[in-house]
Image 1 (cartoon, rainbow, N blue to C red):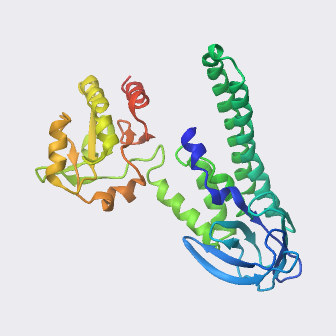
Image 2: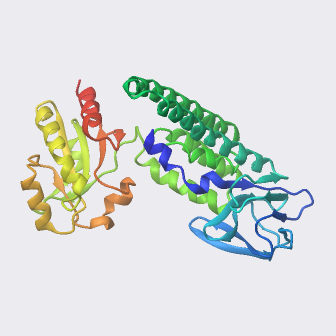
Image 3: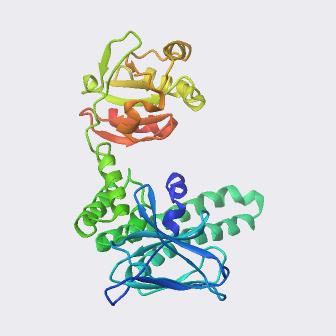
Length: 368
């Protein structure tokens, strides 16, 4: 839950939308704290930012962009690189944006767009998580120390239940509004590993209804890449050499419960976790369990020494010595190590990212 909570990006918390009814496009409004300042309008095309127009605000902070956009997409209105608000603009709509604050994404109002209303609704739902958390923290802080331990467990249950309720609201929005760009902000707040079907449903809706949006294309590409390693999919093949130069294929372990362990000799957290991995292997090696260790090392000697020093006695150790350029990084879509992928006897992915007791419990459940 914590991982999901901190995965929420600033972009997704600040997106807004727009509209117009006369066949042309115009964005206008007022930014009270930015009088006689330059505002910039830019299109979000995947990882690229494309300039659209710029305008200087009046003495009262009012502004109006007259340049038309040619495609419905996510755009950003900015004063500086660190002061932006993201909006959906449509060539057939007009939007009025007003903000009395210094930060463009804070407490703004938006008129003229149904998608704009949806984004603000999603933003408010997300904010309710913070509000609920803060209220629970206030209760905890006002509780005598001798009663805090018992209360903490109760509050954790309350918080987790509340968050699950919020996530369900996001799932409903995706189900009902997958034809909108705005609903991407709800999809991005769900863990793709746990809610891949919701992400895929959203991507299919975007393909059908917003095929020209650069932002939608970027989201669709991420979903397509994640599909290969989604829970329930057969794990993509890995066939890399061991320290002796002999290739060992992941598929050769089919029929066993397998943990793919992505690690490296230079990775401190990996080395710290290795005793737990060794313990798990020794406890289950005679029960149809195997570990397939994939190293992101770039120095063969360091890799071999770490295997020996940490007592990693299982036979399946492979690496292309490619460091972060290794083919497995993009193939499995991870950005940090240690990282694990748990497979059942058919080679299908059961869980990802588990460590320590959580991983041991998942392995034991599959073996039993």
